Amino acid sequence: MSPRASRHVERPRQVWPPVTPRAIVVGAHVNGLGVMRALGPKGIPIVSISTRPFDIAHCSRWVHEHHPLPGLHEQRETLVELLEHHASRWKGCAVFPTNDDAVIALAQHHERLSKWYRLTCPPWNITSRLVDKDAMHDLAVASGVEVPICHGRVSELAKVNVSLSYPVIVKPVRHDHLISTYGVKLFVAEGPEALERACRQVAQAGVDGLIFEAVPGPDSEIYVYCLYVDSRGEPSPGVTVRKLRQNPPFIGGARVAEVVDEIASLRDASIALLARAGFQGLAFVEFKRDARTGRFRFIEVNGRPVLFNSILPPTGLDLVGLAWADVIEGDRRLPSAMSWRGTWIHLQADLLASIRHHRRERLGFGALTAPYRRPKTFAVWSLSDPRPFLAQSRLLAGRALGAAAGTRPHGTSP
Image (cartoon, rainbow, N blue to C red; front, side):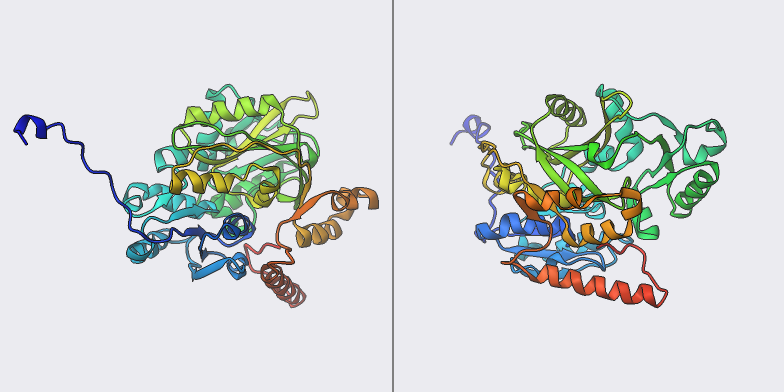
């Protein structure tokens, strides 16, 4: 071959080893269980990395290999070290982070880990704009999406207008620190004293925070637009999920949700925000309908699987399956949505929260049982995969005994 011709030879593409690709699921709470149950029945081997004391997904029948990593929220480098330690055996596998600790660790070391793994989250220069609540707020404003009023930063409380209209929401810039310290991701302040106390607790968790107006309206006015943005930047069809009940009410995670018809304005706002961020991957964009105006206000976006992920496969738009096909198989064919309009129920969380908060929620028997009388999927309970439910039951029993003895560990979750 002549020197001239050799200059036009294409560089060889990276060749991945001929091993069966696995799905490495980091985080074994309900979020992770939804990922495992989406991929496991397709014959995809699952590696579970549990990170919290209340994790239960690693007990699933679909898990082939389990590695505990309890200190991830304090030392994110441990995840990188674990993945590098097993790189020769896991090379070419897809990694699904299902909590913010995992997302941050993978995003901050994206280039380093991409030598061996197919990561389902983007690098830190993109991910940081979704994890950091301050940057996320600015991103939404720049995208033309309506947002709640931000009154200022926790570190500048003295400058915040004393004539605030309460209640207000106090959000840490990164809520993973607050979860580790207090077991919650934000605070609601009903008055000046509660605001000072919440700001002090955020500071004690080692982070700054933002003070937002509380968008009025019940939890049932919270809508989440769920979609997948593939490696070419093309958004998939979406699923609109409406939260019906949260645990705890007003500030917690979903405990009952339903699939509803698509709302065009939510899709448009979600795609505009994600495109401006340059985001690729699983996206869950949350809005709340303002009771004063009827207009939707942006709350947050999660670039990872959420609690109610298992509501998606019955709709025909299995976003975890789309991510697997994209990063492992290079397949970007988009399925058609089906007409399934069922509910998702986190059974134990719903029963316990309905008892604990019955005076606040005032749910009648009809309202309480309505989601159970429709087509439904459960967060944890599964007759074909019962061990996570049994593990969760044991944890709750231990928690009840601890409460009776006067002890309650931070960060526990039903």
